[in-house]
Length: 231
Image: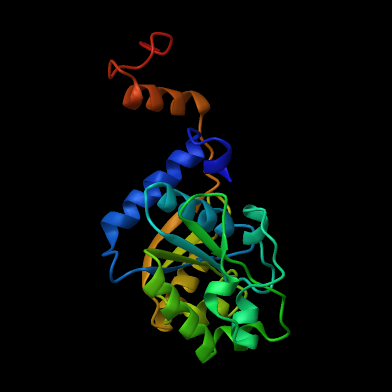
């Protein structure tokens, strides 16, 4: 996780920018539960979910990550947590939400891991129990980020679209086809989902360009360092 490994890295700064954009874009009280999905596998939706949640917690918000990718869960690995008990136990066994939620290494950030992988993931996500989980989470936390399977090949994100307050769609720079992204967006909107915005992931940047920006914005003089000046 970029925020935990190097809080001053370009990636960590990007997630702070995303956090700020989210705050300006929506009313926190009416948009607490946000689904994070992608167009294709490998777009980085779990990285976006976990790092954005960490950024929110570091800003003093009480945040929860729900790993609703109960086909290929990864959130527990991001936080080095056990995954013996989680969302599927709450949905199938009626386990109390507070008993399944774990504290992450980031202060103020809790995690509901996926739990055991079930044979019927779509049906569980469509259940009344899932709606109840989101409702309880909405009441207990300032922000709830739901990590969901890619919306391109699977129906899970479409199923959850109307149960959440907003959706962030993750795409890969130079790889995700525009027509595919448009199809996913329209599919989520037909399911009564509200697209908050798109995260363009895996953008290549110059480390020198970032250093120039960092020193210019953060330096005490408000100017770029001498070694970069005039180049």
